[in-house]
Image 1: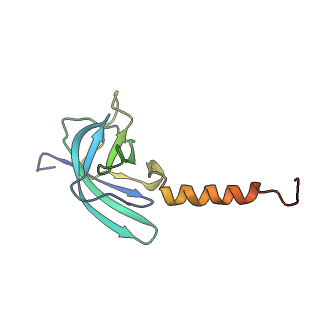
Image 2: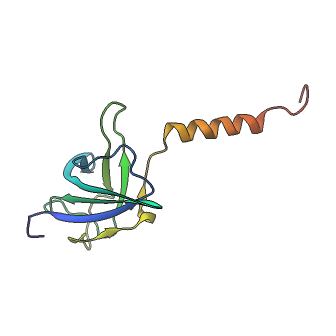
Image 3: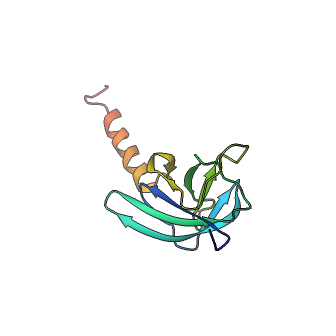
Length: 125
């Protein structure tokens, strides 16, 4: 756009742990920042920018990453650009091209459920 930034909207299942100002990354390198996070009934709308010097494929995916346990999260754009159309200012990444990390509570709940399902139903069973 006119600010020297490419502004994009992406829709995620949730935005847990993300905040305005968190990084946008390509191959782990910061290239932009989150501008706004808007909770919606069935998803989160996240508006972010990246420097247009870094080309991003028009059909890129976005994933929320938690690089380390004690640091903030970031959004990773993938795959790296290798040619073809690039993502334009005002582009939208739909929910089916985004991913969020599994939360510890969700994993624990699934492990408890699995344990219950595998528990013997009779002595010696």
